[in-house]
Length: 448
Image (cartoon, rainbow, N blue to C red; front, side, top):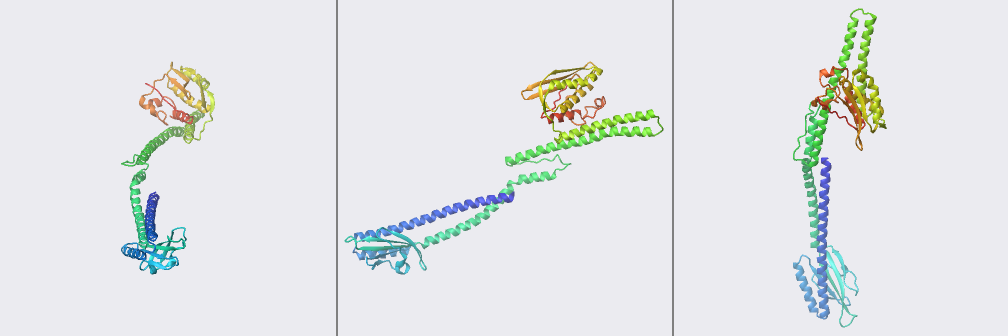
């Protein structure tokens, strides 16, 4: 990332420098060229006026040529002029012009107007040249040919030095831009270095580590905050997983110890067939408990990995409640608990999973409702797109501090409550997973 950002920054700066330098060079070259052309045209116009006003004043023409030669000797751009008559004979010429700019250097012209061009001398350098005809006032058949040459070598040298300077500026600008880009990029990416070091420190024993933000850009502050939130979730999940592993070991140890103890007692001496049958029946109950626990754990694992995809179908929730209530009616009568169903609504759910969730809730309610109590199954529409299926009992209730963890796997409120019935502590966890598979949630309200 540092390399890419440095490259992009450097290229952007160099492109801007090249564009600015090219524009300035073009402006300078255009300005110098315009000045040179204006100067040459002005001199040609002055010579034309002299010929039109005083066509036979050769002394005046020679004086003009001498003056131009004197001025040019002190100028950075020497100027030469020449006047030829209609027969091509020399009338006036600046000193040294014949050697610097011969007749062949000028463009051919006619009476239509001024002709301009460029000519490079091997010794004197670069010239702008112009040629024009001036008609005689006595007869149109006679006319003078005037020639002017402006040495622009100094301006060309100036442009050459400017190009060299531009090249030097671009090279220096490239190096400076690359150096500055590296510094800026590294300073800008310091938060990422902090994030990287923080992640390197985090392990199974250092999940409490967090990223310490500073005066960072808002994007990286948001990234660090999101990363810390992810660590919070990971730490919570890891702690739950560790607790789950410990609880699982404890839950599996009890039935296995029971099986081993009964088997050792039975083998310690000769037993009757009835005694062996009792041991086998007891072992069968423990095996059944293990099988139910494994089945529940397998279901939860599949639900966690979204493999237990529900087969959704429109259902009459009231009818589903009544079916579950009918199945538990005999148990409710035996325990002296009144079981009723109220309300109705339409739900989109997997019938088997829905009945399993309701069965877990109803079974739990019956186990904790004393004789003479009441359990009510209720279905209701809450919002146009929200339904509520409730199992309400008149049991002893649960303290508020236990409610957030009731759906945790193997969680028990207290030993006395846990020992009041045989269970694995996975029933509410299964209900929660089934609700989440349906896009819903499990909510537990209770008071002692």
